Structures are given as C-alpha cells and as structure tokens.
Image (cartoon, rainbow, N blue to C red):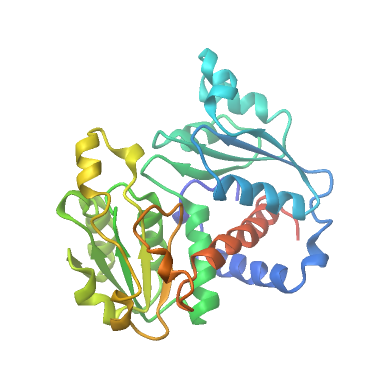
Length: 304
C-alpha cells in the first residue's frame, strides 16, 4: 500500500489485520518499541488538530521513530504561497512517511500524486478521515467483540462530518449493519453517501430528528459536534449547535451495553454527567487512536 487517502483504499481483510496488530501492540508494547528506529514521520497539519496530530506523533515515538512537521499552515511556506505539491515534494526529502490534514477536500489526493513517500490522509475538509475510522473500528471491536450484526446511531452533523462518512463506508462492508441517521434537516447525510454506499449496498437505514425514539435500539451511539468551521453563516451555526445534547437522563432508555463514541473535540453535545457512565467510551476511543496508527505506520513502511 503506497498511500491511505480513503478508508476504501483498505480491504476488509487489511482492516481486520490492522486491528489484530493494534491489539497485539496493546498487549506487547515493548516488542514494538524499536520497530521504527531511524524512521521519520512528518505531520503536515494545514488545519488545527489535537488528538489526530498528537496521536500520530505519539505512535511514531513509541515505535522508536522521530517526528517533524508543523501544526498550522501559517508556520509553513504555504503562508508564502507555496503549493501543496511543492510542500510535499520537499518534505518527502526529509521524511519516510507523511500524515497530512488539510481543510480542502481532495488535497491529500493531489499531494500523493507528487509524493515520493507514503501519505496518510489525516482528514480533508468534510470529505474523509480514514484513520479516525480505523480508531472507531478498533474501539467498537474491543468493546463489542465484533464488527457485524449491530445497529449504529450516528447523531449530529452528518452533512459535514467526515468521520461519519468514513465510518459508514467502512461499516457498510460488514454483515448485518443497520444505521440510524439522527440530525436536523439542515445537517442530513449527503445524498451521494446514501446513493453510492447505503442504497447501492442495500444497507438498512432510517433518518430521524428524534434521538430518544431510537436510543433503545442502538448498540453503538456515535455523537458528533456541529462544526463551526464548516459553516458559511454564523447564524445557522448558532441555531443548530445545541440541537442534540446527550445527558444521563436520556441514557436511562438505552441498552445497558450501549457503546457511546465521539471523535472529539466535544462542545455541548455530550453532557459531562455522562463521562462516568461505563457506556461512555470516547476517551478510550482516543487512546485506541494511538495504537491503530502505530499499526498503520508499520504497515505502510512495510515493517513486520
């Protein structure tokens, strides 16, 4: 595998193998600590990030490698007008693998056409976020013991939520998956996702505005924030930002073994009174992100 731009670049077998390796890393950390000695990861983040950037950096450091890069475009030559293609070609001279986040959809795809080293898409606009999806799959697998035969609720910003789009693409390839798509009309899942994935594959799904009606049916609830940075109109953002707030009282109707996920950062959509509920797994999810990225770095560098 040369690059990872879309979760569909990975087969189900490759995803399952990455999960297997990540679980082995969790169980045998010391075995993996020297695997990337002498290797360098460049983190090129043209858009702000906490979890994704730091988990990539922590992953490479725990594998014995080193890290270089930037955390915002203003601290790079992009601020001087340098193209993404030129930035990638230069950074490829100094690194063995690149993790790249960009606010424009398709930017990592353009970059990989010029890169001499493997590129991992760490999020491009409202389009894709494949390593977050791998994080989600590892978390679900560890919590549920499976990736099939379950009902998954996706709640919040389903229009711009790249994590949602990637997760639907991935989970739709497993048997017995049903989606409950919970959002206001303005933030409904894009038609192309329904047409090209859900309808095409015959996946069962329903759309609703009411989280409480379907909560008792869910095995996994994936909450998302309304993303201010994706809105052109601040008034629309203010009107929609607190549309859903999950709290302890609402969870009384949910299954005892529900798994609550969130790609983070959280704003108001999950009340802090949920944090101590044993079903809340979003901080464990963040930790899983480091381990699955360790497995992915190894795979893309061809290290056994």
